[in-house]
Image 1 (cartoon, rainbow, N blue to C red):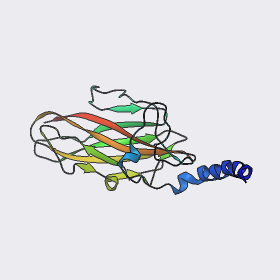
Image 2: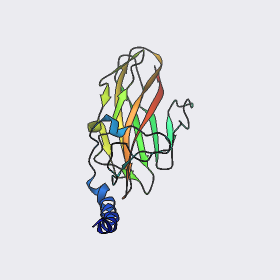
Image 3: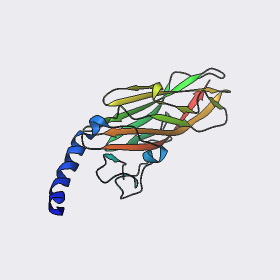
Length: 187
């Protein structure tokens, strides 16, 4: 009987992997979306034939502190940027825009609960401390999320927080988090 199991299990695992992205579900909890350490390919609590994986590639901002003040991640599987959206005035609500572009063969995971957890900062008040998927525009290759905030006065303010997202291929889905920071000029 063990010989039969050894022959059948690889085919069953392949069948699960080939259809996984089409029937993916959002993670059960916060820990399921946490990036793993170098060398790991899946969360420890995941079953052996899971399609949930996290990137083992550490990321560093490619243009943090650039003239525009945007944080950017340009990785093999995706590009992520926080950018200004309009002008900013003291006491008036403004927004920043977070744009995730999946790079082929990856695509944006349409079922993932995208969110941005804002980090409190002097001179800023966020309309919501956590901006969820309902504020995101989902397209096959791109996710765009607008994050509202209100600056209390003129000058430079830093909008920062953590963005949780997912990109997939037909075989696997990666669940990622990146810290974003954007300096805006309030006039």
